[in-house]
Length: 83
Image 1 (cartoon, helix red, strand yellow):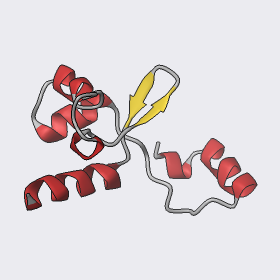
Image 2: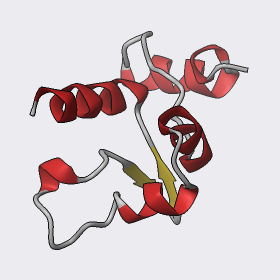
Image 3: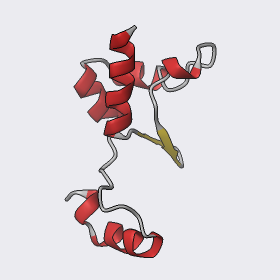
Image 4: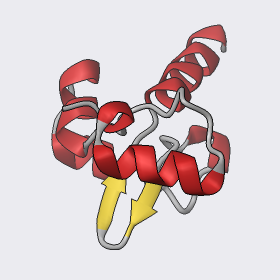
């Protein structure tokens, strides 16, 4: 079930007046599959403390979980490709 069509998402949208284009967040495994890298590589690139923020994979922490907005991952890849 897509987050945008779930009853919970509908209530959040209703309560916050959020945009209906809310997308489902990706997991570490989703991003690893997309980029053809290991999950440990994905985790490592969310916490590169010695590197500039622009070199880190954009992510959201939800408690102990790391999630990724597909639009932000696309923008990150476009930025990396343009270098």
